[in-house]
Length: 372
Ligand code: NAD
Image 1 (spheres, rainbow, N blue to C red):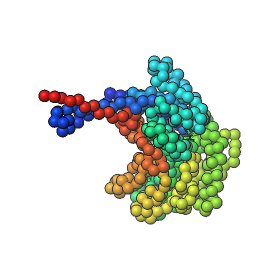
Image 2 (image 1 turned 30 degrees about the horizontal axis):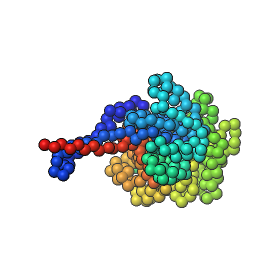
Image 3 (image 1 turned 135 degrees about the vertical axis):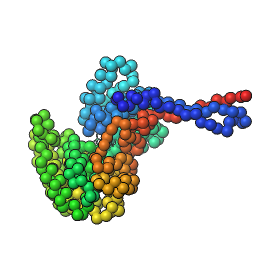
Image 4 (image 1 turned 45 degrees about the horizontal axis):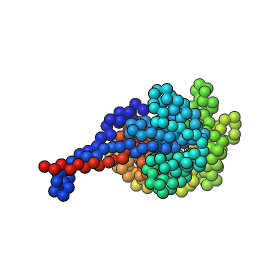
């Protein structure tokens, strides 16, 4: 909120020199106008953070909003709206409607007074929203999923890469769009790195997150537990080597064991689909070219990480990888001042930073005739 509020008086226009109008001089300038009412549709993972990313930028641009939180996690958006009211926001600026995506979400997308839909969620829902918005010429921003590669070269700092890969796999139980779930590791390092990652996975303290010392809680819901287990079974059935974890039995709480697969191929489902759970898939490569080809052989393009001490190579690979954000020797360096978003199935548009605020404006050009 603090970072985005700074954009409010910096969304400036331009003055543009032209050849005039039928021989008379003119002055042309542009203004950045708010796009209008925004429909903000939010998923269940990190619901407050994602709501605030949208809210802060669109308020800075002068828009109003109807927030549609996930049916799984409506409470934080409702509380936020109450706090906004208490803080003195005029009624009607920040609105929340709760309900299911295919009813309330759809109604928001079809509403003639909504100028833009800012959506974060699955590619399936994103595709439907874009279809609706396309017919009605609404603006859309789609922040969808990912299957982000972490490319570990054999000249990387082993410990840094291990720490970064562990974080990228297991933060928020892997229910992170930017999760670094495809670990591409150079052959000479593959066995040692796989073993260390498996050890790190086994060392994660899974349990009730209210207990001191617990590092990982349960996944969010039964459907997610079933989905993650289904993928783990698929990985085993398709012949990847299980180094840690495995299918988890249901307990009180939907706890999934941190799981590492090695010797996977990039055409396996565990390497292609977004699992959205604590599951890492290791794939071995020999050359830089092969690493880039593997990284880009994905329908997604949200984030990527390059682990190497060779900075020339790091920049070369960062330029070649098709993704919205690349971290060099750091996994997913999110910051309110940086743009965030994907390419390919990972979505359209950017949130965050100047690009994020600009995305809630339209450029209008005004020309005035200046007779002598
Ligand atoms: P989801 O697509 O099922 O639901 C997201 C939101 O869209 C919910 O509020 C839902 O009610 C609504 N919705 C569903 N169908 C709709 C429709 N037809 N019309 C309008 N609204 C509809 O996603 P989810 O399961 O809540 O979240 C997980 C997904 O979100 C993952 O794929 C994850 O990668 C993605 N995600 C992406 C980012 C990012 O920044 N790229 C961040 C977080 C989550």
